[in-house]
Length: 393
Ligand SMILES: Nc1ncnc2c1ncn2[C@@H]1O[C@H](COP(=O)(O)OP(=O)(O)OP(=O)(O)O)[C@@H](O)[C@H]1O
Image 1 (tube, rainbow, N blue to C red):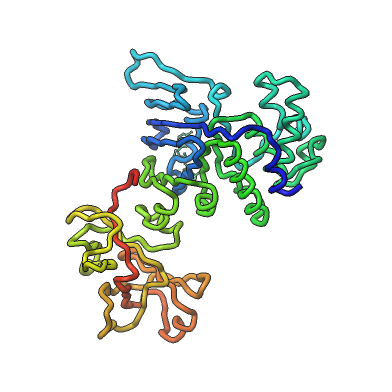
Image 2: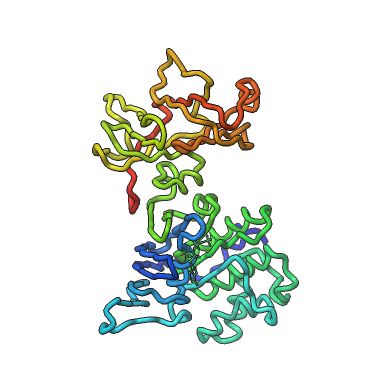
């Protein structure tokens, strides 16, 4: 059965729920995490961030696997956790299975001794649903994840992608208010990911289930998430609608995900001045509007942290200083590395950190090699300037 046919099965009415308000502080060894996250009913939030940023720690606290030092979790008006540094105050710690929060990880973790249908029926059965009804519900869910007819099999008789579909069915059949997804496609073949990602998106949408998806893959944020939060070193450094976060990244990590350069500096009369460890500051002037004022996404106050964002393909590279052009943003730096890029060769510079995409022919023509001092330039029209500072947009 196709995904579009299977959406017609009336397993549950889409009622948007899963309003989460979470604050948590937790220390794990030398690492400290201090974040506040909200998820609106029916919304999918992507949680992105470099290795060790604290993404799994956030999910662990939400799922009830980790106890925060301090914090409060509220889901649909129910206080699940209330923890205070002040030990005289009463604490609340709802058991994981009573939270209405499902967790789906990289590995499907189906019970090997149960059939696929029994796995999917497990949540409803545990919640007290009669065996026959739970079995019917499980079969409906298997149809909805394109596993019609696979109910009697054991998990070992499914492919990796089929097992992850069954795990999605099992997680959603339990009717969680909030589903946590920790790198849900990381262990799948690349070819099977797009279809399963699309299926997950449909099922989250037609059940109105809120979700938080932790991922390294920007496509998960683009395809699945209404909103994206970026975590770095235990803090939320960016949070907003996914398209805004990717269009105007506020952290080097998000910029790398979005495939753009982000040069951090301070605002000065609508431009961004980047300090360098060696050499003169570089001043990045962005596009200007019809009134001649800087075309910043938000107003910039002099002296505040700000970023210039531009594509690697917008950077012009030359062996001599560009003359007689309208280029405003010109600086020189030493070439650090050459890497293959989809459209040719990516040149890496470090002060400030900038990538420039050029053709292989240009590399040959200019005789480029690491260590060479080169001139770089970007047209103002190709540069967007915006405030830095993290937090919600
Ligand atoms: N049991 C533990 N004891 C001490 N420190 C820990 C423990 N588990 C994790 N940490 C530390 O907490 C920090 C955050 O880890 P976490 O797994 O939450 O990051 P992550 O963003 O999920 O990373 P990744 O993308 O690599 O999975 C890391 O610095 C890690 O070393």
